[in-house]
Image 1 (cartoon, rainbow, N blue to C red):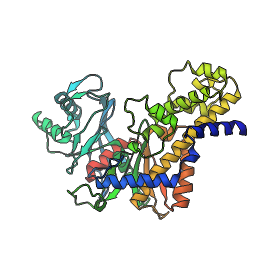
Image 2 (cartoon, rainbow, N blue to C red):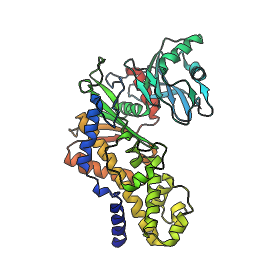
Image 3 (cartoon, rainbow, N blue to C red):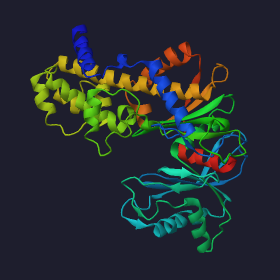
Length: 434
């Protein structure tokens, strides 16, 4: 068993894919330097986008706020309020198709459709929290300028629009009450804000929002005085910064990472995301397995079987780790237990690497925040995403690196929390306190 394990380790080392060869503190410091450069407006692979959204202020009790959540395929509308215990009440909840997801539409059709969606609740509140999870430049008045849309959504002419302003204009043109204050935010910021209501009995030193699903992103709270690239300072002492952490590029990639990247449409972009997130971990692991076949590490029968497989989604990888003898894509390719064991080590070590990289990401953000060094008042990290919660053994591995480096070596303390309906709840918090 040890000889098989060593064979896998030597193979991964040969292609710079072995997790132990990633230096934690060195990479944490590089990530931290990129954060600082991004805040100053210097060249950086981390965009460090100011959101102008603060976590300061008490959440008003029993005050309703209209919430919209524009995702890839769905557009959700709800009315949310919080009781004395900060428990959310979600009413008038409806799920509609995301305008432009099934066919190309004009921006006029987009705004009209959104007004149709919110018309039944338009008189429920003067405040709107809008979780708009597409690249957007957030403005000091907390409105947002659309920078681009994803490939799945086609709305002609909307790029460059100030989305809240144009929506209110259309509401008024339709003869409805347009006296509204709209706050635009993305899903990562909404996830962070959800942490404010996660544990009312606890005192947290700060908050971080972390997404690890199909993609990845991180946001945190920064002191205004450290955000050198903006001059129009708000009245708040701090604001949430959207790091766009999936774009971190100053990390040593393995040879197989680079090969996989060449198969993507956005080569040499989102480099960090391609090493850790659900959309790319499956293809990375698939390429690792195929390379191991080329090297003769797996049996000829396995190599012949895997050659007939077109793609390897991450849930299939996770299922193999959970049930190595059950009928799934990978186990069906195995000729014997040696194949299964080698496959297990190959996959397990790549997931270990992803967990270590996530810990490096979080460690840099924690150091930058300069919070959480008192175990009585940890940093609340609200995490969301299927890869974070469903990938076999990922959390166990991440917790190991948190304990070893963040707790024991660095002296910082964190607590992970999970919020149901994070985009809806977080957008409600944003709409009420900003």
